[in-house]
Every structure is written in structure tokens, then in C-alpha cells.
Image (cartoon, rainbow, N blue to C red):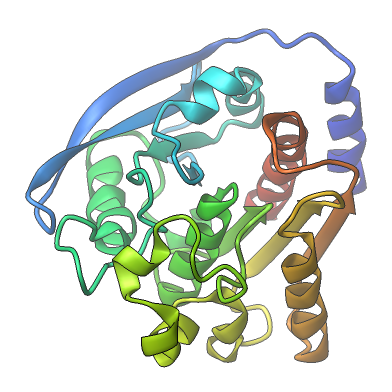
Length: 268
């Protein structure tokens, strides 16, 4: 692990050489009856046909192209670490749930089932949960944890950067009520859809977990509380709190740590 983090700090100071293959594909979702755009980033010269995969989720109001266009260094990381990265479109405000109110928002089923099946049927990646990870930013950080916790048979490692890990302090924000109902009338449903209330589904080491959040981020307090709760429950995890706000300046740095975490996990 020490070598991985040493390499990470070296990466921060060098100019990246972008040498990955980037596909944009349309993946059909039977659950929603529509095609979903997905960016797939592969190493330019893969070392084998069983590469690990990271599903990398965008935030609220974002789209499938956010990561590859706003953090182009992701391509160099893919090439260096020999990991395939998959960036699905999660809708403007899906929160990666299967909405009980809107049949057009069934993104839990899409990402955890339909997309994994598509990727493993069309790309040279491992078909093994030990070689599958998922992470994301903001809404995508929440989504990554939500999907990984609910589908521990699919994902073995999960990250979250600046994730909305407790949605209850924000009942009127980001179109969440349109997907799961008003908080005042659906308290139990909101608790079932918020990460900090899902920790009972975890067992020690059932998932490799890495959380990070900027100290000036409005989600910092809820992330720190999740860290404290996981610590209290003796759930091993990594937690990083560093300078930064809820913006791409922070996320373009945090992805370096996220990718190093997954590389270290997959190598083990």
C-alpha cells in the first residue's frame, strides 16, 4: 500500500499522457424501456483480457461524459493502472434508485444488473465480483454506496467522494422528493434510501470502503458522521478529509486517491 500512495503523490506533480481508448455506447435498459449513454474507458494496451472494472458515477445534473471531459487525467490513470472505467448516464436526478414513483427512473436495476451484464459481454474484463468496484461524486457517491451495499454479490469495493450519504437534512433539494415522495409523508422510505441508515446491512470486510470529502463541502458533516458510525460498528474503511469544496477542483484531485485505493484493492 505504501508504494501505491507514493506513486499517487508522484502522479499529482507530473503531466499526464492520455493514452486510453474511450467508447461512447448506448446500452438498452429493459427496466426503463430506453437506451442509456455510457462512456467506457479502456487501457490502450491491456495486459490481459480479465481487467478489473470500476463503475464511476456522475453527480446531480451531470451526465455520462462528465468525468472524461472534466477530468481528462482519468484516461492516463486507466492506462497506468490497467483498470476499465465505466461511466453511465444516471439521469439528471436519479440518485441511482429504482424510483417507486417514476418508471423512467430505474437506475439501480440499470447499473447493478443491466449495465454490468452489458459490459462483461462486450469488453475484456473480469467476470468476478472481486474485480468489480463502484464509486462516484456527490449524488454518484451516494449512488455508489447505495448500490454496493444493496448488491454485495455484485460489487466487492466501493468509494464515495463528497457523497450525499445522508439525504434527510435536504428534504427539498435535488428532486429527491419526486423520486421517493415527500419526506414528511414517507419517513421510512427516506431512511431506507439513505446510506447512513443502511449500515446494518454491512458486515466487517464484506465491502472494501473508501470515503473522502472536502472540509469546505456542505456534505462534509454527514460524511464525517458516517465515518464515525462505521468506526463505532467496527466496519473497516478508509476515510480522507482534505481541503476542498463541492466542485471539480476537489473531485479532480480526489479521483487520484480513489483510483489508487481501487488499484491497491484489486492488486491484493
